[in-house]
Length: 98
Image 1 (cartoon, rainbow, N blue to C red):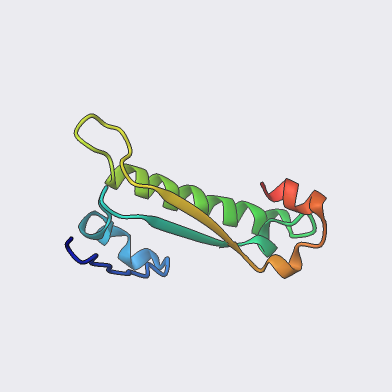
Image 2: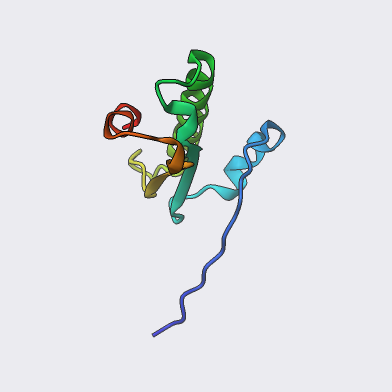
């Protein structure tokens, strides 16, 4: 069996790099999209919640656009990872974030 080759890339989210996505995003990757759950709890301000959702939407759409196969289907798995779980106090808040 051939050894597994693993490369990790950190796209920190700076908009100056958005134009380079087509060089690094491909259907052969597995993508982790991280976000702070703290920004989505009901006690967070509406503007913070909307900014978080906007960033999530941007990244998911960018991955979808750059990972389509010849038939137009998205070919790469995406895993959403919520951070700052300790800030989410109740099951109701977890449900609201979901």
